[in-house]
Length: 343
Ligand SMILES: Nc1nc2c(ncn2[C@@H]2O[C@H](COP(=O)(O)OP(=O)(O)OP(=O)(O)O)[C@@H](O)[C@H]2O)c(=O)[nH]1
Ligand SMILES: [Mg+2]
Image (cartoon, rainbow, N blue to C red; front, top):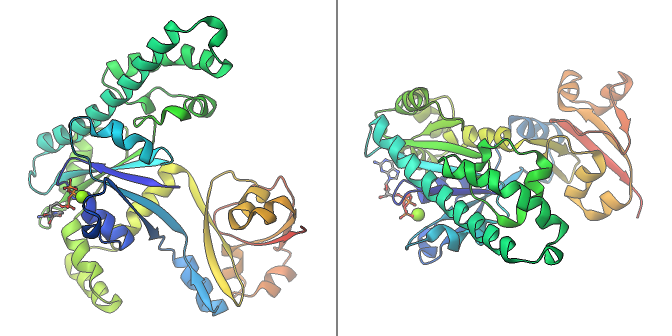
């Protein structure tokens, strides 16, 4: 799961990227994209670490990409760089222009550039297909040829492709195009420190289909520089319950349909990110290919059961809540799993 951070120039993308990943972009200012990893804050992982006291604790990681778009047609140049990106986070300047209409215009300005960039791709492909002989067109292109006109209509109406309501199979057929606007999008309004309610106000008035949330990057930067005790005090004094970091990651998880499961032991307690509805062997494959290849069974207890039974796997077992699951088991958010495999 990788998330690309897009936004108009000087909207606060790099600031947000640095808050999320800790990677300073200053050293990479000549590069159009910079990659980094955000550690997923998860109270459950902290609790498991408290109980197991492992040598190593590893939170789940979510890759983010900071994008610095310049020039005439920047999006076409960046498209391939972000082809593996699962979602887009658009940062909108809500601090220098605390006016709903102006911020919305800023949002749509970038959105329209992305729509236009996708449209050019479709037009080129349709032109090429029209010139090809029937025999030279691959079966996949036949499907694309049927789909693309519908997508073109959508873009020409000023709507992103995610508004078309494509099936997962159709999205799969179109993956080689790396369309911008087919990706799920989270809108993050970068608000001024004295205007927290601005994002809610914008969300209410704009009625976008995409989820909207507010963050004050300036405050979050200050926050990141404090130790945990000072952070708590600072948050309390600002009337904030938690750093925006956690809210953004959770929103991204829900937008992209991701869940976490855990592996535990004396050596390491670790959280893993997988798509919801993943079957046990595939989840095992997130750890190691051999685990998937040689999958036999998954020994599963749910985090909630584990905590309800005093953090004792033995008690979970005697209560009959430790399950042995097979290949068809769909891993649930909060599962604690030991994989049995044979290679
Ligand atoms: N007042 C205020 N300024 C901010 C905030 N967030 C970012 N800035 C300022 O806005 C400017 C741009 O921030 P960046 O994070 O570099 O923005 P960017 O979108 O990465 O910019 P480019 O990569 O140049 O397009 C910097 O001077 C920041 O200090 C904020 O929440 N409040
Ligand atoms: Mg930047």
